[in-house]
Structures are given as structure tokens and as C-alpha cells.
Length: 255
Length: 143
Image (cartoon, rainbow over all chains, first blue to last red; front, side, top):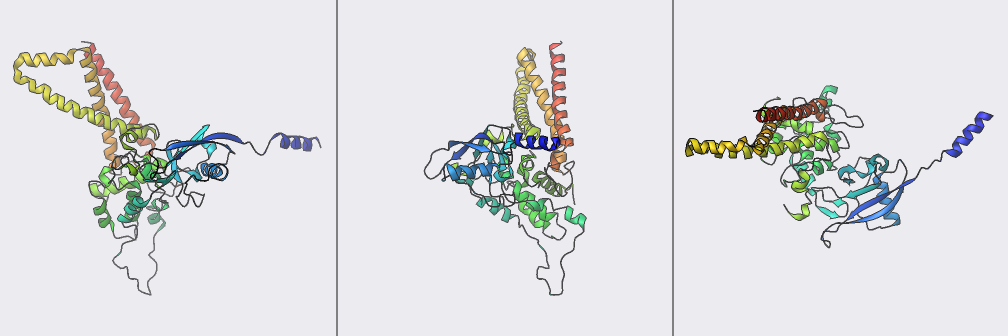
């Protein structure tokens, strides 16, 4: 009986909610009417499981509904909510405020992408460079006969590319890349990693085509292996690894 | 580069504070490369002084015998050693050597390409450069 009592006391003394608050600084900028970004500050309460996206949506709901933010799945699958959080590219839905270990959380639009408004950026260039490397299987026998079956792969063959197939096109790698910071023509780590994804696929026969596409002055040779792209990837794609493997093909280290 | 591209520019490229030791190595590689290029140009100018005869040559060489000259040469030694050591690491990495193997990623998704081998390579290059600089300073100031 005494034990039950102590458990009851413990439940009372341990509140379910341990709500704290942070100062959320949101970059507000409309390129059509503003000269420079301004920061709006909001005090937002959070639990240990609250994500930055939830905090932003809280601000939209209760303080300023004009904050422009793109989001969809809220589970790091759609790649829509990439932004700079305390200076580093992250997915807002995948970043808990409690993990940031800071009383001030600053959110800004991703670098190296044109800003539409506030936290929302244009992805046209990312999608164009992604399209440029032919992100699909290239084969001579594209017209399948009715009696043909799927192309079989061993687990080892799948391991060669499955990591790179996890890309959700969020653009965080392109935002972190130091070459993208200065070279507007660079194809970028996202597209290069996807080039490797298809080059490493045993079903694909378009290796030479893709290597020719990226073998240019603003292509793969502009990567200097800083590795920032891999450090910010929320899906473990490791673009830096794929890019070095691709370069290995071009330099003759790999065949 | 247009304003609406929202690029970080050189300021962002040269900011090593957000992405670990690999980004520090990236910055040091650029700085040491530019420093060595500057030294190479200065070295051509320096050796061209031999055309001014022995007196002109000795006069110019005396600049390297000052305290400032010793510190400058120590920096050149440091840049040269770091650029060589880190350059070998990067060249191997560029060929796909030591960057790990593709595998199914697991949370928290530590990138295999940023592995301990490369970190050891970076720290070793920095350490070797520091030791070489100290040795150079000891030789130059110990005369």
C-alpha cells in the first residue's frame, strides 16, 4: 500500500509537460518589396519533442499568419521544409528545438537558392540540374517485350546504390556546399550524387553518357571534397562519397 | 552572380565554423595554396635579383635574415607541409580511396566519407605543419 502511495506521489511530482520557451527569430523578406531581410522575434513555448517546424506553425497560427514557409509531410520525407536553423541547413520538421541547445533559434531561407518570400526558396535550378544528369535507367532495350520480366539484382548490387536513392531533393547539400556559395554554374552535390546513384545501378547502361555530362569545368571538378554536403544530409545519402566514386571512374581509379 | 540568387559568396565559403574539421581543412587548403602561390611569385622576383650582381643578391637575401623574414619563412614551411599532407589525403579521396563503402544508412546517418581516416589525415597534416614550423624557427633563430 505504501508502495502505491509513493508511485502516486511520484506521478504528481513529475509533470507530464516540462514546457520551456525560446526566442524564435524568423527572417522576413519579400524580394519584390524589401531591400534586405528583417527578423521578427517571437517567444514560443516548446516541449522536448517540439520541432522547429511546429514552432513556426505555432507562430503562424497565433502571432503572424503571413510567415511564408513550405512544408508537407512533417516526417523528413518530402524535402520541403529545408531552411537555415541557427546558421546550418536542416529540415525544420526533423530538427527538435531541444536538440539545438539554445535559447534563441534563428530561421532563415537556405543559402544558394533564390528567395521567393521569407523562408521559401525556388527549387527550379535544383530540379533542372537533377534532370540534366538523366535520373532514370538508360538501356538499349527500353521497349520491353510482353514476355520479359523485371531486371533482377542481387542484394550486393542493390547495396551499391540504395543509399543514394534515399535523396529527397531537399537541397540542404547544395545550401551547405562551399562551391555553390560562389559558383552559380556548378552542377551541385545533389545532382552529382544522383549521377552516381544511376552509374552504380547494375541495370543502368548510361554510365558514359552521365560521365560526359558531369565532366566539364563547372561539373564534378569543382568539388573540393569539403564534405559539408554529407554532414547536413538528413537521409544519410553522403553525396561526398558518391562524388569521389564518380571522380574515381573519370580518373581511372575505378572501372 | 545576381542578387536574387541569395548566394553566400566568399564570406560563406570561407566560414569554417559550422561543418567540422573537414571545412577547416578546406579553408586552410585554400589559404595555404594562395600563400604558396604568392611565395612562388615572390621567389621568382627574389632569385631574379642575381642579375644585380653579388651585392644586389646579398642585399635582398638579408631581408630573410630579419625576425620578420624568419617568421615569414616559417609560415611558408607550415603552408608547404600542410598543403602537401592534406593534398595527398584529398587526392586519395578524389579517387574514391578511403571514403567508405556504400551501404544502407542508419540513423543518425554519420557520413562514411567523413571517417576517422580522413580526420586523422587532417589532424596529422596540421600537427606536421606545426612541428615543421617550430623546427624551422629553431634553426633560423638558433643561428
